[in-house]
Length: 108
Image 1 (spheres, rainbow, N blue to C red):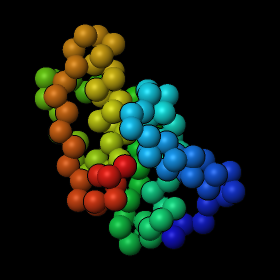
Image 2: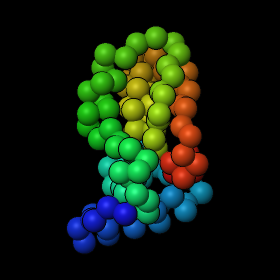
Image 3: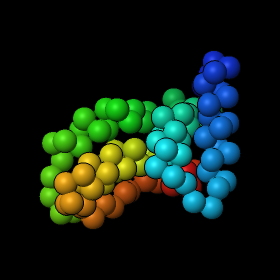
Image 4: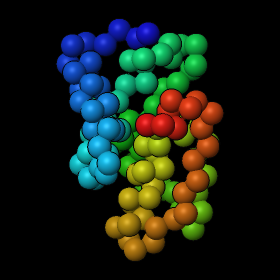
């Protein structure tokens, strides 16, 4: 398990609580992407999991084009989220498919 600061752990807990809601707002989703920490509950060094920060995902989304996108090793889906929402700004939403083998990440 990764060592988190008290602030990171508190934010991670808040993200986990948001995930219990029936429906998340865009703000809720972005909070989860920014604060749900892949190392809070698992040994990320064993899994080799390092998530794309949401700001960087939106930078990548600028250069992502096409009607269909496949996000391999999607983690919790930050890159797919950014690509989808970037397309929304231009009325050109792609069909996004995420591929992830870790069932805990898929659940998030």
